[in-house]
Image (cartoon, rainbow, N blue to C red; front, side, top):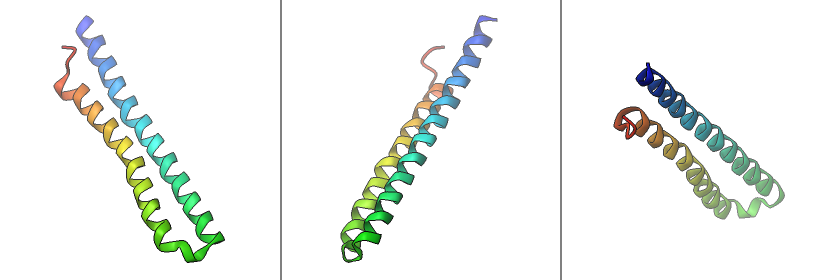
Length: 82
């Protein structure tokens, strides 16, 4: 019984890790897109420079989701607790 509870909690932890990381990445990418759109609407001449920073910001926000995926895979398959 103890092993089943531990396995269930590991599965819940893995689901929460990827779910919250995906939520954070989605919010971050949305805010980067909103800022880029607002900046482009105010000053269209800055578009090439703004696109570089927008893509960099989106890539950094997406890395949060990748970290959550790695943590969930470690919990599910490498399982340091069992």
